Image 1 (cartoon, rainbow, N blue to C red):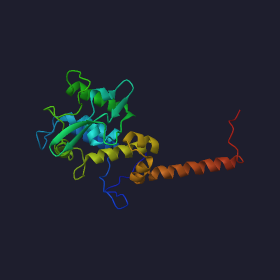
Image 2 (spheres, rainbow, N blue to C red):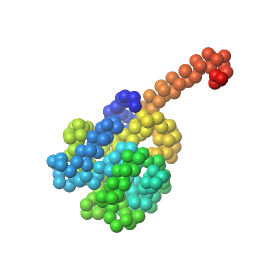
Image 3 (cartoon, rainbow, N blue to C red):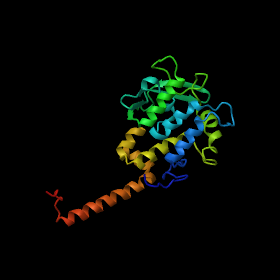
Image 4 (cartoon, rainbow, N blue to C red):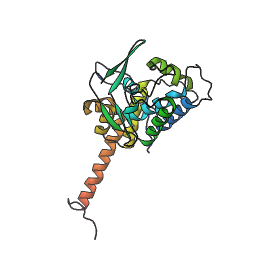
Length: 245
């Protein structure tokens, strides 16, 4: 895979401009997940548990929204087809109040192809932390059985291990993982439509607008492909080259 420029603190233009966190590389994702999963590390808080490693791994490669990720249930993972379904149940949080809802506010339910390493991580999560085989059981809960709060998750799972993962001083939030997933998808060669479908954007225009900086290399690659095609067509007098007999 080609080297990729990491963009820090990039902005969206317009009246509702936002600043997003910089994305992680695939190697940085592996280091962060390994640090979270390592039970031997001396964490800054005893509440940090390896049970969150698969949650971060899933976030960085599939890019779900927070309430979709912690709403994942056993029935949403299909290891035979290598698929995961997001959005059938979402977990919303208002301060310390947590409640589940059927479908998100945009009624976005999507089934996405899941790379084998992510499926394996989810299966390990199920074997280790999901008891009783209840198909409605949630995959990502605290040891008490309740859902992790978004800020508490960052405090307990990622911040204490960032230095060990070589990410000291980096601002890492759940949006970091969602944008990381988009970046890795584009790096892997997925099309704009494929990324849109996996992230759950209603319109590819939104995906293009939000991730223009990540797509720049793809634009340049497309230009190079067209130039090569034009040169080949001119070489053959405007006709498609025929296979040699």
